[in-house]
Length: 292
Ligand code: C2E
Ligand code: MG
Ligand code: MG
Ligand code: MG
Image 1 (spheres, rainbow, N blue to C red):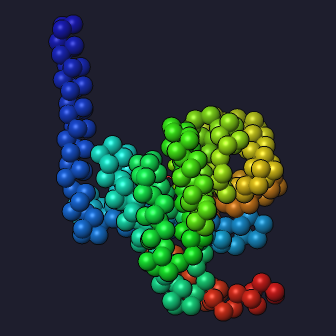
Image 2 (image 1 turned 135 degrees about the vertical axis):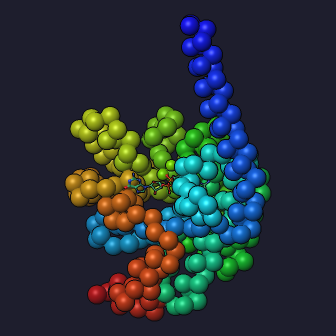
Image 3 (image 1 turned 60 degrees about the horizontal axis):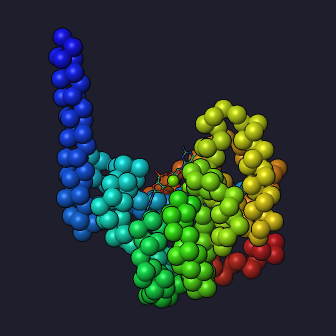
């Protein structure tokens, strides 16, 4: 009976690993086709200046519009693509799509708020990254400041020297660097000493997880204060409630990205709501808007 149970467990074990592997192979086989057939789509999640509750930018987030499985979230396929290297191609695809959108908004005489894109660890380690990005914004005749770059702390930590040089060169070329998911993984305070980033992105989710909102709030407030002293601004993501927003306003958080303001939305919806809306700022009316 004991052996029976063991075999049963083993069978279950093998099955789940086998399933996982075949799943990964299936995804790997499908991804190039998916890219060619434009099944990867960009969603945009707006970011808001806390003090004014007004939009100040967006983040581009990829989704896979699978013909059979429907909309698949990046949490499912990005880890697989990171393992098999395909993420570099997908990253580039999202960067280019973002540049196309920015170019279109400019051509239409609209004010394009900067859009940040995610740079996976593999892309970050590409020795050609700086040139790749410079060529891309040149191709679409954009100023580098419009395409903001999100790097994660964990990617940064694994080869600090190389990352420091890459990020230095990117900033030298006019790109704005955001550190994504700050404080949620590897230890962070030491990174703050050497990094040259413009904006820290802190995930609100890591605070409420342990239920110790009081301690969490103190830590968050201190990080914001520290970041400001170090010349960085702070975006808090994952903000879902009015209470969280008000707290963040009180402790000097610059901007917020979260469901409280908006979920990530398809390109078209983002454009309609924020770029082409009646109240949306046309490029030439920027001055009046600022002085009024
Ligand atoms: P991320 O870059 O940290 O993006 C923020 C994630 O938080 C997004 O998940 C967003 O939908 C979610 N989020 C925003 N506000 C809230 C909120 O108020 N509550 C909750 N519960 N969640 C919120 P998403 O779109 O599923 O993306 C997950 C991750 O996938 C991203 O985390 C990023 O690491 C990765 N990813 C997405 N697009 C790309 C890409 O083009 N390239 C690479 N390399 N990674 C990507
Ligand atoms: Mg991000
Ligand atoms: Mg993040
Ligand atoms: Mg993340």
